Length: 288
Image 1 (spheres, rainbow, N blue to C red):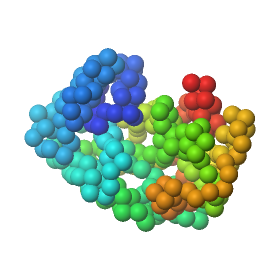
Image 2: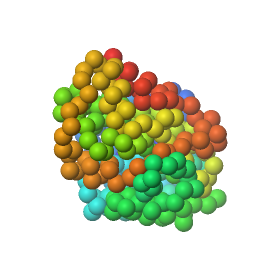
Image 3: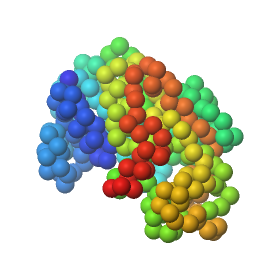
Image 4: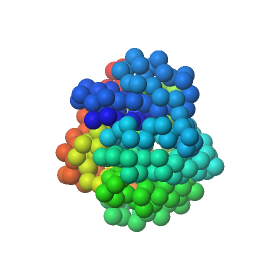
């Protein structure tokens, strides 16, 4: 297949490597030429373009069989979310619908689930996010769902908290001795290694069902406190002392309390995570 990865950064570059290894040809779209050498070194064709600019996307129409939209807001606020996710999706749909695309995958987020009771959620669970950023992501999903059809077979992959090389906020806080325990320790966290996100997107491109949403997370949610206890045991360090949590972190992560299931992704695409729980993934990172 001829594959295009838009927002070809942290997850997209790993996805590109996997697709190349499977024998596909891959192009990566980035806003600037700054990462062109990195893409070329990995074997991808670098394309400079902005998903929010129709003029940048029109020349690409008809060139690709698979498209993975992996754009990121780079930690921005609601306005940037609207521009990059919602505006970008509108432009992508306009550019590629009806151009022979055989599979389109959008990496959304499990933040579209607003549950706060600690229960399990699946793809059919209510999507009523409390955070404005989550509502923008849900609106972006709706744009794609309206456009999806025989001429534009599209899928949504709702990704849990990503960790991996150079990523993992609480993990890195712990290693720096800056993590604190507190009332948030009882909250459930849902995580997935970067490499397994890439594997999930690849599986959906190849074997996913058009029109479906899939949750991408590992097999075992963990409470914040149990995660910190595991880290303390794995590193021989002390459990963090009680203290005030970061206001921003608490606001973003403390709004929900849920356990996300990956059953549909496994059952329908045959996806198997390399790191089925946080233990395998973070143990590898500790070795690194």
